[in-house]
Structure formats: structure tokens, C-alpha cells
Amino acid sequence: MKYIYTLLGLLFSLGSIAQNKQTQKADKLFESQQYAMAIDVYEELVDKNKADTYVFKQLADSYYYVSNLDKAQSYYSKAIKINQDAETYYNYAQTLKSQGNYDEAKKQMDAFTDLLPNDQRAKDHKANPNYITALKSLEADFEVKETTINSKNSSDFSALLTNDGLVYFVSTRNDGNKTDTWSGTPYLDIYQSEYTNATFSEPQAVKELNTNYHDGPMTLSSDGNTMYFSRDGLGSGSFDKNKKTKTKKGTLGIYKAEKVNGKWGNIIPLPFNSTKYSVGNPSLSADGKTLYFASNMPGGLGDTDIWKVSVNGKSYGKPENLGKAINTSGKESFPFITDNNELYFASNGRQGFGGFDIFKVDLNSNQGSINLGLPVNSKKDDFAFTLNAQNNIGFISSNRMGLDNIYSVHPICKSLNEIVIKDAITKSVISDVTVNILNKDNVLKTEKSSNDGKVLFKSKCGNNYTIRTLADGYDSQTISIETSKSNSTVTEILLQLTEKDDVVITAEEVVLKPILFDFNKSTITQDSKHELDKLVRVMNTYPEMVILVKSHTDTKGKASYNLILSEKRAKATVDYITSKGIAKERISGKGMGETEPKITCGNHCTEKEHTVNRRSEFIIVKK
Image (spheres, rainbow, N blue to C red):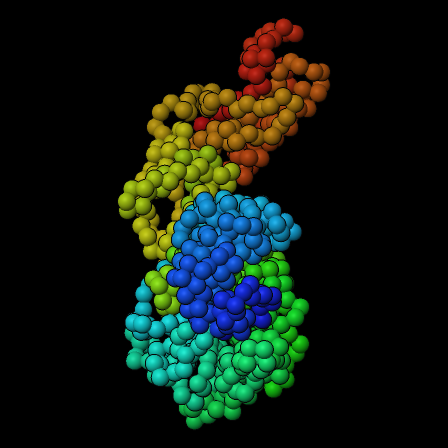
């Protein structure tokens, strides 16, 4: 991950002043961003026991900028023995997270927050200091696999698969390249490989795109004939000379190339390139009208931000910063825009596992950025996410195993499974059913059916599950389902009433459990619906049966009001039965008010006796 800083050509405001003659040489190299060489000189001071807290801080920052976080952590731990600036505590926290030491990282973030309480990173930390547990519990959207495209001792990253099966990526594998004084490693070149049947051909350098300095990463148009790619200004003659340090400083720019007769040519710089700031790591929208990129140009929110610019043929609009939904006061880079207008990017300014994490934001909505979680992200640097929807495969880059390597990512097909519980006879939905969901490992998940009889659960596509139901008054049922290979399944489970004396049919009436009503109400309760469903079952079993519903009230209130209330209850009961398919001529209702109490207790009824008197009876008019 050394190159995430190199490629962005950050214009750090270092402000470092040499403390004495022994550090002047190292400081001069540090100030000119020749960190690899500065490290060697600072380390000499350490070896000679001439290092102090200042040198430890410079060494820590140098290692941090070339992404050797283990070394940076070691020197930051020495540097903070005296008070430091806020960014030192933040960087130290990042290095600790990269080692999985989240408790100590939290302490350093506390110190950072105290010094910069209004920084968004500080606000995020204060609002959710123990976020790691939640991140680890995120459901994975991708599987991550190693690839064979990586070289053994070089950095390889930013792989992009085109629709015609070509993979472009950048690598330091060319040992003949010059050495970058920033990182102490060879400059980057653009490579190409053919991807067929999940295998890569031997990568070849794209010579017409490569210079003696950094070239890449890149993005391509949908037809594969237009490329936008990053290039070091040193390779194109676009650089500033530092008179003080006598060094040339090239900033990163974006260049456009066109494929002609199978070769890349017509290479031109974009008009918003500058020697004052860097632009790089481009990503082109599917329609070719918007180019996303990373830059430290003026007007940003942090060290590097994600920007976009409109593309209209050979003309370009004014770059626009994507704002706080994406950018922070830290570093954001490596944008990738999908066909569905989802933006993936790397950030070390948001809460993550360590180093750079990959985030996603849906530009069609107002939702914030989402950490992709494990296994896409790790405690090391993870970046350069790309995705080819046509081939259902993508790539990420990570130094989780030491060197920057390319890993393939495979979207996990997820199925939203809907189970609908219904009565087998009435086809009415049944709520509050206990549903056990067991996978092949008999891992148990228990849900309750909702008021509309549904249970929803997510799973990987194509998995087998055993579903068991348990409902009062119904036989338990066990079925097997296979979740869809697409995105959703719907399974209907029909439950049979338990064969017991739940329903008693006499010569005069159908006896159910009491159909009770709340005081002064005529609404059918959920429990009462279950009982009325049994009546529907009986009437379907006996198609000639005709029923009179007699609704009764308690003796509270005026007799005239109770008569009206009972009429409403009778009507509500009849309406529910007919809504289940019973013909209107087979059922009628009559409100009895308080004229036929079940328990005769006059004005001295207890509340329990009142409840019993509020009832419905189902008289058999015709059997």
C-alpha cells in the first residue's frame, strides 16, 4: 500500500525545522518527500543513540507515509512520550488498529478527540468508540479469494476486468524500472492479462502506456476503447523544481488514451491537471459522461478527496467535490463507480478495521457510506475495489499478507425468503406461529409469524432449509425448502386444525371457544379470528349448513346502547366469515344486547362475569 500516498502526490504542509546539524540531512529528504532515503538517515541516528522524540516522530511519519505500519507503530509509541499534535495520535491509532490492538487504539483516538473535538473523525469516535464489534458482525456481501496474477516480490494492485475478458492492473514487477525515492521501490507500470475460465494468462506490460515513472491505475470505457489513467508528472515533463532541496517534484495527473488497431495511442493530459496538486485513480461511469477521481486540489475536506467531473466528448466540466457523505478530513481515494451508480472507495478517515478500508455509498439515495466489513476489509490496507457485473466478479487490493496483492471478490447471492402460514381450509393467514428454521448444520433460528402470517429470513442462494411450525390448535408441520438461485422465494405452508374437541357441533349450534370482545368495542381480535377460522372450516366441511350469529353484551351501560353495540358485533362477525368465502345467504347475525346473559347477575356482576356475557353464539339454522 506504499503507493496510495505516492500516487496521490500529496502536498503535505510539513513545517518541519531541523533541530541540529545531525538531523538536517534527514529533514531535507523528509521535506522533499524522499521518505525511503530519509528513513535510512534517521535510522542511523537511532543506531548511534542520537535519536530523540523529534527523530522518533519523523521516523514514524516516514514509515507511515510508505505504509510500513508496523515500524511506524514502534516509533509512534516512542514519540508520544511527550505531547504531540493531533494527527500524530490519529496516525498512531491507525497503526495500532493495523495490528489488531483496538483497545490501545481507542486510547489514542481519545487523545486525538480531545485535541480536535470538531473534526468529523473525532465526532465519529465520540459517538461510537466501540464500533469494531458491530463491524465484525456485518453480514458479508462478498467472498474473497487469492489469485494467480500476483508476482512474488512485487506490488500488484488496482485490477480491472473489461467486458471482453482483459484484466488491466499496475505492478512494480519490472526490475529494470527506476527506484522511487518516496518508497524505495520500482516505479509502477500498467500490465494486461487475459482472463478466461477463471484463469489469468501471463501478464504483459502495456509498453505504449508506460514511462520510466509511475503509470496507472486506470479506468476504461464500456466498449474498452478509451482509457483514463494516472501518470506521474515526472514522466510527462509536468513537475516543479524545489530550489531548496534541489529536487524535482512531479504531481499525479490523469491522461486519456484511445485504442487504435489494438494499440493504445493519442495520449493527452486532461485540462484540470496541475503542478500544484494531484489528480489520479480515475473511474468512468458506464455512460462515459462522468469521471470520478481522487485529488488534493483546493476546496477539499481533507488530505485527498473523491471528486467528479462531467465528460462531454473532448470537453470537461468543472471538478466537483462529492462532499461529506463520502469525504473526510482524512484520505479518500480509489473510487470505483458501478453500472448501478454505487460508488466504492478507500478511506482511512472513517471508522474501520485499520489502515484503509473499502466503503460503499449508493449515489441514488441519501444514505451514508457503508463499511464493507469482513472479509473484504482487514486490519491492514484494503483498497482499489472494482466490479464487473457482466462476469459477476470483482477485485480488491490489499497488503494483508505483507505485499500489495490482488484478490478476487465474488458477490454472495442472497435470497430473501418469505414463508406464509395459512389455515389449510379457510386459507386465512395465521399469526403468532412459532417457526423454526434449520440449515444443514441444524443451526436453529426461531421466528414468529407476523399479523399477515409471514416470516422473512435471508440466506445464501441455493441452500436447503428445514422449516417446522408450532401453532396453538394446529398440527405441527415440517417441510424442506431450497432457497432460490435468484433473489427471493415464497413458500406457503397450510396448517391443519388439530383433531381434538376444539369445535363441538351439537344439534343446535357450533360451539367454539368464546368469541370475546373488549369493553365497548366491536373489533374482531386476532385470537377471535383464529376461532372464527374454525367455523369457516366447519361450514366448508358442511356446505349445506346455515348459521345465525347471536351477539351478546354485558349489562354495563344503557340497554338501548348495548343493543346497538351487539348489532355491530354481529355484523363484524358475519363480515369476517363472508370475507373467507362463505356465501352471504349461509350466515346472518342478530344483536341480542343484554337480553340473554350467560350469567344472570344484574347490576352485581363481577368483571369476569361481564366478560363471559360479552360473547357470540353460532346457532345452526340448517344442518
